[in-house]
Length: 281
Image (cartoon, rainbow, N blue to C red; front, side, top):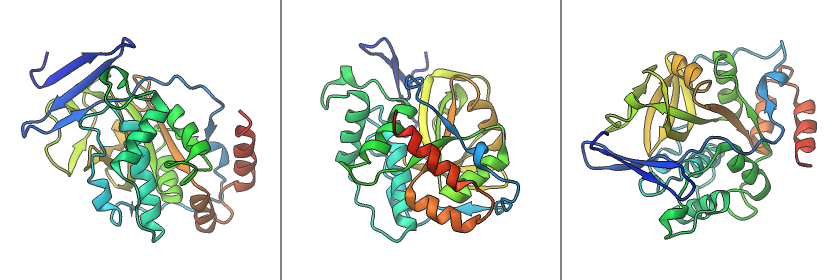
């Protein structure tokens, strides 16, 4: 075992891993393999031939940078699925010109609602899965009945242009993957790290994070309050290995903005009809 790793068994039989970097800062894993299996929309089904080519670079992380640097309790809790959702939600608000109202208490409340965590009871800190979080976000919002999303779509991690299109149009990618051990031994010490292909996915390293920019070498991500890059090759590998998943979140505002960016290149009518159909489940 790595001396900087504390693998804690939980009451559910899952392993929650706590990792400390060389500076003594603590990070916690918190992604469970998916358990929610509702109908899942795929973004590729709505992309039309007339869709404009995404720009070479895009960055939505600048305005919410201060909020993105907040670890949102993911040093002490396995709440990465919730933290990633709030980092994305804060990005939507900042880029629309609104203040970001979210607190750590909001994140912990959301984490409790989506996982069964009871504050103060470590035995209930068992992490979450993306589909449960996304479904809850649709129905209830990040805070009670506020900051809801219209839905979410699966993204093909093997398709670089689809990833770029999702981020360009909707301002986010929502990752849930099993990190290779090399990415966390050693842990990133600061921002500007690069996660590239580095061996097999380790299912004990389940983690969720959001992508908020892209450039030539990959997607700019926010994780544990640090900003780094996951390469296109790593996205293709780890979103398709070890139970990895990749989504984009669709807020009503984002759909309206995306429609203006790609007036005849996206089947919004069908997407909105399918989102309404999903609400019935």
